[in-house]
Image (cartoon, rainbow, N blue to C red; front, side):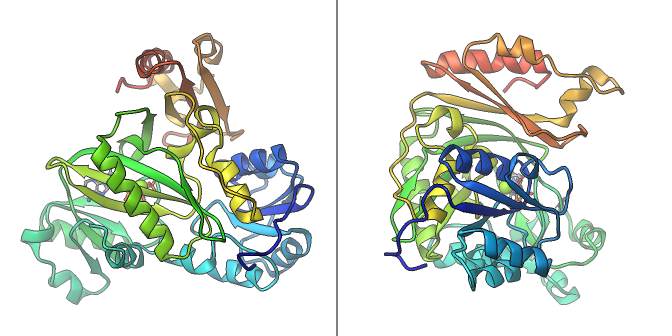
Length: 391
Ligand code: ATP
Ligand code: MG
């Protein structure tokens, strides 16, 4: 679709590849704006499929299902960066697809992604591609160890990552990862982590959400806090400039999340990007006047993008399956939702997943309030009730 093409208006059907929680919240936003939705996911109980007008239960590369999507939808997006880029390419022959296959393909591959960051002049962690015995033997141990070996493709929530201290550990780790192409990254001394969500329209207009401060535990996002002064102003501006140049460099259309490390010396390093809404932007549903999911809808439909305004300090607590087994219990319990909802400004989001498993993202809790102090106090109370360690 060209930059000047007419927007796709409410009433039309918007499609999404992937039926996870991100797709579910996309569906909610699209439906709120008056669109019909179609979800493609092979899982018969996918969180997004269960709330969508149409639910195509098929693999991402199922030709028949892709043809149906192309026929019924006015535009398609993705909620999952590991959909085959070829599927997006195929759909793009028939209807607008945002983000484009080319941008998603770069985000699918850590090595290509890092090369893009370098092209944009944004600092990355020292790293090397490990894709052969030769590249393994050539690793500069002084420069890259201790490090983290990450599969180049298909990693998420810290999966496909192993921490290594010595060349011997590195060799064993690469074998454990089945010798697939990997990126070895130097372990950096982190002071904090943050992320920025930008949305870029097909006319190149860019808007953004405020810089988000993230706390990860065991490689999984645990807490996001968003309020004034949360990340030093100079770092926040640097992160924003970097995220915008990364999006512009891709001629990106859609919502893009860029994750950063703040090092102990105060410098900023880009970690990775997600070509879609991101867990660290979930707070925006309750804390901003335009959420990351509404931005996704507006981008793909070619509607105007207005700069979102954060109206409340916000904290997001991820609700992992572990909470269903709190206090060492073997049998699943229902977390004390009613008690949590007694606290002011708590917004519960559950994804409708049937089975709670440790590490599985089951939902999240957004907490909003008048001041950062009030939000923090409530978030800590909610965490204590739920069995989430204080932060
Ligand atoms: P997700 O897709 O869920 O964001 P992922 O599996 O792609 O996660 P990364 O973002 O690469 O994983 O890493 C997860 C976390 O591990 C980071 O947020 C950070 O806390 C830690 N980590 C990763 N790389 C490094 C590094 N080079 N130095 C220090 N810590 C790191
Ligand atoms: Mg990450």
